[in-house]
Length: 316
Image (cartoon, rainbow, N blue to C red; front, side, top):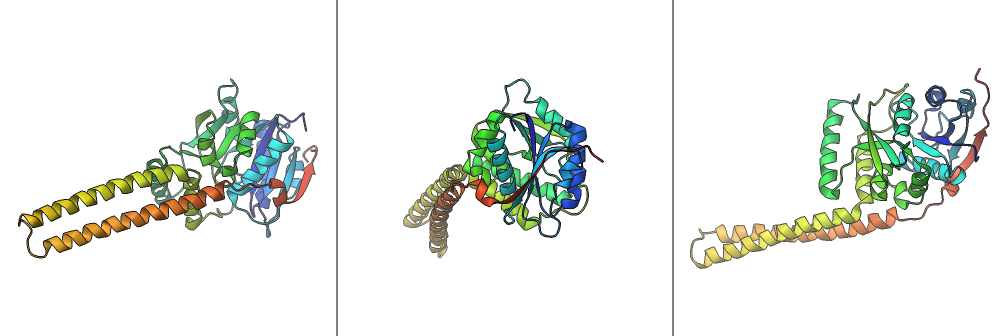
């Protein structure tokens, strides 16, 4: 596979019918030499077939996972496969449902041309989601910045240099959250404003619970940063509580406290102090669990059931 210079990695789950459209759009946008890695994330009702790639006149593989692993782990599997089998190729990571528009991939690749960038990511200019989703996403970005000290303004649509792909593939955190791993990697990142497209068809498999879990996993990658910031906040609250408790005792001693006020104030402040300590302990424990989880070694080959390779043919 030494002749391959450009690889597209795209996860697919129960969307086998639209994979053909996606591959045809890829050929039109990136030419006949692009190598396609479709990762079938344990589809049962609508599996991906190699004809989706060969029918577009492209080369590639369909990786069938042993079971549904989720969007992020499917991407991690495909990226590890590309970095392992085609270590000298640039890699474009994108969704196959049409929301990441193949025609915009060249804009990301151009950002890699001068060698000063390792990863080019797509920052969304326009979205087609509901107002509620946009509000929730804006709130989430604020929380992420406060807890992690970093801004996350992109998703999975990105172009990566060969060296960058090898770095990401070596990161255990990639199996938790792809975008957060890019931030953690210290690779040189360029941001390209790109519109989000509309799905080829069907409905998204992501529900509200899945989106919340996806956001939590982004925080798990930075569990140590979250721990430090929460501990600082808790220490500040605890110090304030102790200072106010001392003030309440002084006011009681000099006779400025009204009947019943001292016991109520002291009880509330003591409760705040205990809850702060509990929050700190819980954050410490959860941070440790998250860190161990994100550093768990994963051999991508053990997750693959079958690999269908396509050598390309003239599209009919």
